[in-house]
Image (cartoon, rainbow, N blue to C red):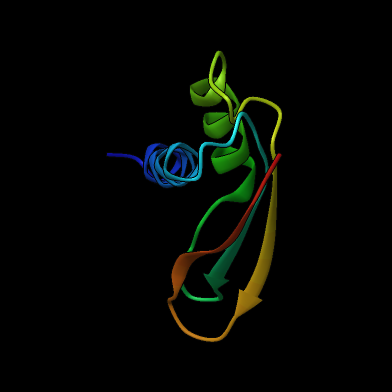
Amino acid sequence: MTLAEGILKIALDYAKKNQSPRVTEIGLLIGEFSYVEMDALNFSFDIMSRGTIAEGSKILVKKVPGRDLRVEYLELD
């Protein structure tokens, strides 16, 4: 599973659990040493989220020390 797929799955599962019709924003904590290429992540996420309730959602990133890589928050409609 790619990083974008994992993030999308988390967002969709959370939205479904909360009976939300739309995911509007995804906040990520990404460690300085996790070596995530943000352009590639955004591109992949945009393609994978097409046709889902997460289509068009914004990904916001907060850089943190170390190698962390996790979803910090999700905003739903």
